[in-house]
Length: 117
Image (cartoon, rainbow, N blue to C red; front, top):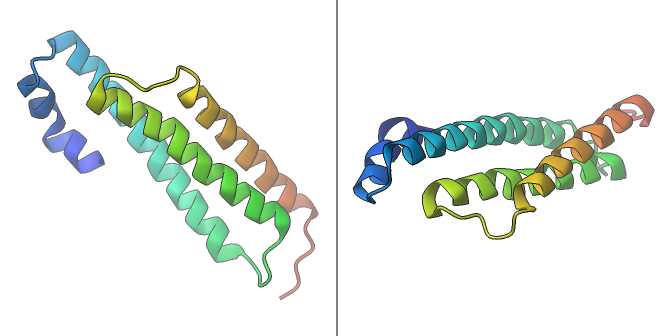
């Protein structure tokens, strides 16, 4: 998504007949979505690699909320960028809330889970 945003999205949107100010807005939205997608995908990978077997419930819950955040927050922004609409207004804020819950649960897991390897 980031590569397309950097190398082809502006042309794609201009070919759709979208005004320059709207293109700028959508490029900014795409940059935000890509940034959050990248950071949380790496965090999700780190959570997965740090899981003991069997995984703790808190880390599983954190991973679920981080994945939901990616889908809702980034997906909603991508929808705005490519389709011009995101569906329901609460999709992006709900994804942001999922990110916050995921990070809080992960912090709680880091502070309270006693894992022995």
